[in-house]
Length: 168
Image (tube, rainbow, N blue to C red; front, side, top):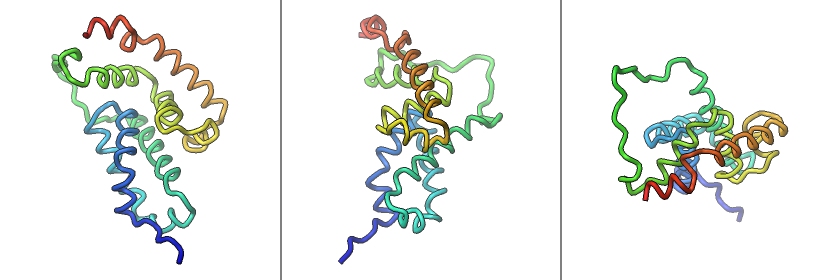
C-alpha cells in the first residue's frame, strides 16, 4: 500500500514553525511574519492537490513566500501611518531576546532582495541553484546578492563583538 499523501493540515502543523522562522527573518516582525505565513497558506491551500501531486510541496510553498514577501515591499502603501514622534523602542539589552532584536535590525538594514537571498541560502539551507529557482533570478544574481549581504552583515555594528559586550 502506498503511503498516504499528507493532507494540508498535517503538512502545515509539521512545517509551520519553519515557515514562520523564515517569514520572521524576511519581515523582522512577529505580526508581519504571522501575516506572511497566513497569506502564503491561503494562496497554496486551493491548489494543494496539484502541489502535492508534483512531489514535495516545500519548494513551491517557499517560492510563494518569497514572491509574496517581495510583492509586499514593492507596493507603495505599507499600511504604516507617519507620526510626529517615533514610538519608543525597548532597550535591546533589557529584553531577554536581545540577540533576536539585533539580528532583526541587521537583517532590516539589508535591501529586500538581499534579505530574501540570505534567508533562502542560510536559514532555509537552499543551494545557489535552488535559491535562483525559488526567487526567479539568475544564479549569478544569487551569488552577488549573497556576497553583498554577507559583507553588510559582517560590517554591521549591530552584530559586532563590541555591541554585544555593550549590551551585556
